[in-house]
Length: 303
Image (cartoon, rainbow, N blue to C red; front, side, top):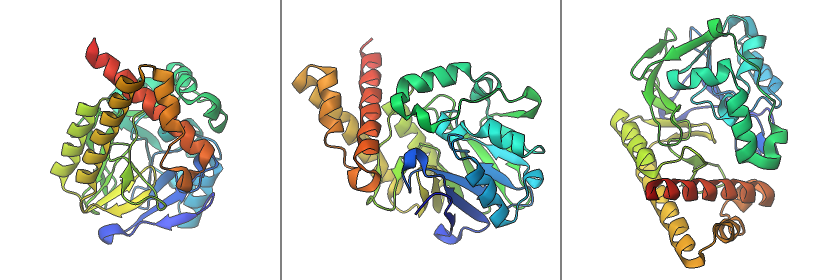
């Protein structure tokens, strides 16, 4: 896997779907942008905006001209998913930017989400492009249960607020597959199973477990991970519920043992299980962020 590599999604008989590796944080196999070659072509998620031309090149390879793209659909407005929306909207003048209604304000005026991202991401902000406002006439606010009609495919909107209040997952009935946002965890070709994601300030374990139940009720044959790639569903949703619960329990226990949050962060950052997949720097930074999210959630429940 490498920057710009295009993969055809084939899990459980999936068709018309491709994803491009945007080499997020200079980490192959971490960030996917999906290209759905439907009668009304669509992008699902956009990456950070850094190297966004990679997405346009992939569209061209698939056979979709920028002026023919009709939908850009970020699953939520965390900028690793929506940071490239303004750039792709500018390059694709006929595309609507369709997203769950709670997130639209942050793309119309991205000041708050940009400042929040800098606080959470730290030095990795160098891998982001500061977002510019998207004209409100280009934004389509989607409600829970609404459907984006793509002709021979569709995106059914299901609110999934456990990771972030503005997150939704999109179900495509034609492929019997779900674009999972961050609701089903992080998949990697270099990691067996799935691993946790729990960034501050929105992470809530109970909400995330509810989101997993939402996914299970949809009963999809395939999962399309923003991080990273397609998988047959199998037992992955049950596995992720166990992984996430265990992760929160471990952080909580270590906080009780050490009594110092920075020591807890350092402990897990030094033992990140994703080093072999992502390299030491990215794995450590990701784990620090995830620990902070759990600690913040624990504090919220104590109040």
